Length: 300
Length: 100
Length: 202
Image (cartoon, rainbow over all chains, first blue to last red; front, side):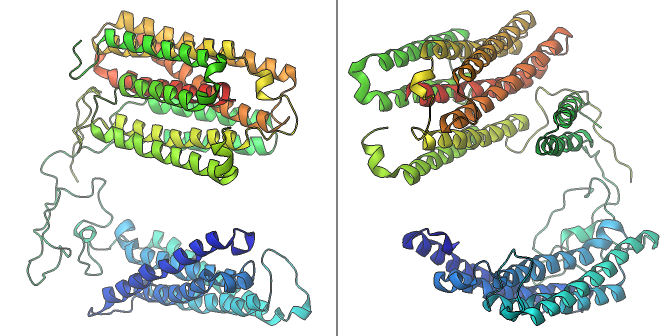
């Protein structure tokens, strides 16, 4: 973006604000470490992914800071150095965090456990594959390998790096297949997850797995940020009743909003393909959807 | 004119009359050459008045919970800022001072 | 797990008790109107930015018809009056007047749309198409989007009118008429801005 000719003032503003973002980001990194500090660390799959997330995200953040400087970014922009950066933050950061959350909350959402053994295979293959795929891109990018081109001359000297990336990508693919199999397999496992399989302290672990449609039988009264635990100043919160003492009003679900929304891409596809009948069909879906949605009975 | 929590039919009719009058004035000063130099600011002010009247009274914003005013006013302000900023970016301050 | 849902009937006048004490549908709709401000704001900004930069004609001063458009403006203003009278009627339970004013609002909206159709076809006939020049593109997209909003509003009003004919509309669900009014007035207000910025400030 610094190569688009914005001028020195705009460049400086963007460079400055981008560097400034590194400060709260750094605070976040310390937050995440502090969350782990002093705790009893059990190396569940979820934790492995969480720690992996912190590490990979820091690496991605470091290359991100180099983008903040306009002169160095002028060399990096539109090269694979950027691709390395974004994949470290997005895959190493967001996706690893996502995996961590899935392993953590899967028993709560579905009432069944994911296999820890397969989870660990998933983790290590992902970590190795991800680094193998994206770390070499730092080098190939700085050697000048451009983005969004599909073939490169051998003289550029990035062939080896790209081959490593390919191997890494396939390893990620295998890891993800293991993950999907792990997810699918829970269909045939017993629904035996307790309310609090990890000994967590927060409110979601106070209700059954999977939770009833109304979630909480009563609105809980809490006195600390760790309601389920005994803390220095507070005992654990009083357990929730098994059944709701007063009737709980749960709004009825409806398919019509989703159906209405589904009409919009149909309109768009018809417009892109220059096919009026498809546009009209999509419009019909939207209109019918809106009417059926509006006139649906209010209660369940 | 009882307007504590609600405007009356009479108020609505009066507002309608004011809106029509302002529109006539706007069209009028468009055609009268005397006003050419102040046309733009005058028109903007007059339409702002029309806008405010419709929003405050017809859309009942004056009598409703203050929160709605924020809910509408925020994006409205943002839209105005965006429009003015775009004008500055693409026109530069000089053209704006000499009028469009 | 034994639980009951509320079994009270479809009474939506007061809605359910809410945290802030305002009807959640009205709040949602004001938020939507806020977003529409940004939509029309960006279209108006685009029009303004490209104003005076068309390379070929027809140009605004050659083709815009102020007297005709003043009539359209007047028509929409009157439709807003009709809308507000419809709401007042429904709120006090006068469904006869309510139905009448709803229909009048819709008809005035149709008159506006008719005028837009006539204006657009006249412009096309004069050589101003969507891709003719910058003025054509920005003008048709801005006023076309507004016209599409008016069309949706007319359909909405007629639906409400039909509901009233079937006896399904009354003071107990006056909020739905109020929200219809919010939409309709907003469409009118946008037209006020368009009339000033596109037609009067050339």
